[in-house]
Image (cartoon, rainbow, N blue to C red):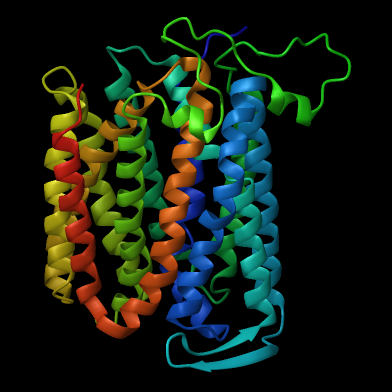
Length: 423
């Protein structure tokens, strides 16, 4: 078996984030044009994590059983097909199915293009186990010495994608073709990822299934259990109950849930605030994400590599959570100057905290269970994202930027929980 290398999985993560972020600057405007409002925007955002809640644990467990590469390839093919439906939605007439007038959800029209966009996001979410499987892949090829630095590099690769995505969207979206060119670009990027995974990404672990079994099926793949749990006192079952029996896992999952909840309020609330209150364009929204991601790359790359031998994950999570609390406080002012000032805290805090947390999570349990652990962790985050995106859009319409103070409180709660983690 070819020895796994770090670069291909970093490239896959970069491509995935590039394809995701390329639609962020104009998605809120697209939903508005198709008849939606802040509630529909939040609901659409919740479709991906909602279906990922179902798909991620299955993808993670499957990757433990038959290998990471096949599952990553399957996941990326699902993403490519989803982008195809997204493109179709752009050409459909804005024909109304029904309209709604509600005191809570507001007024919106449910149109044909919105239905197709919802389906596209659902399909992408159902096959969207690529993040959890990529994290498991990175855990497979990392040692205790380079684990934190490797997850920092993973974050840096995602940051690079996050920089180029909004920038490319701003440039390509300003043409007469509008959103079509950026979406076509996202589909092409997804196709490139399929090519990279198939030809350049070596499998990171031996198959747990005997390749000579003639009647191998997907069902049997999910039923196979690893027996190499010699590093643990006992071998937990690959069920949610079994995973939660592993020391520190419940605390890790709680931090994952709270982090995703706080950021979901941000991802649904900030574009709405930028469009309605600060009157930003898609270009200005892209500039904000580009600036914060640029700083984040420096943090997750050179700075995190420098700190990896000098401090532990717990300390970096503590510092990062405090900086993120400040970021959300700055956003609550609802002003452009404070938003860009907060972007620095956002980049520093997220750049230090999240790779360190993923590194700490990857050390829990056994390597043969990392796909399952990461899958359930991803589902925990998906559940938080569903709640945050659904209620965040509604709350943004009611209380405005004050919504971000709840995210600040959540990040401070994470700080308090992390203090009690035993390394």
